[in-house]
Image (cartoon, rainbow, N blue to C red; front, side, top):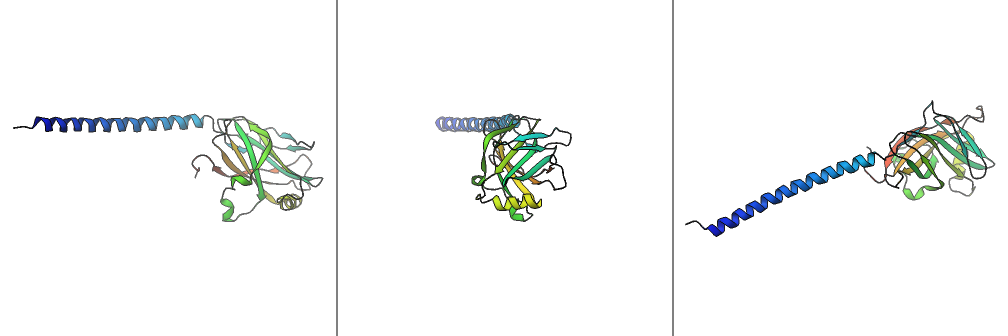
Length: 216
């Protein structure tokens, strides 16, 4: 004779298992859809800083002590004035969201494999004022080292005097402070034969993601 109590319990357990599997699949699908939607939303406000194009307008950059630097398209400049070091680059935002620059780090250009690593965040200098570049528009970055006791002063001054290449790392993110990234640019000072309005070329070398997955 059939044990209907046991059969009923087995049937109930089977139904519960099927419901649990269906619920798990639904939640997993919903989570996947949510992640896709989130990535799409973030992509819509993600900035990507690149050098300005050859046909973009130049930039006139003013520093707090009254120094003016004129930068040509796709340009980057390292200049020594009155024993102070001034740096600037003409930028374009190739991404879809407003780019806000948080800070910068500079070092002498090199080619060793160790320099392929992103600098630690605690070595970045904070911008004295907010710099932003609208989506698909142009803007600039600026930085200065005025103190001769600064640990980077002697090395960067030598680069300015000799025209040696330097790396400028720019830490930036979207307008909400997220999606932070670091972009490494290479620039050099204008040669003595160039006019005062001339500037060296700025080139993008590498990107790192701070808050998300690394792009490579």
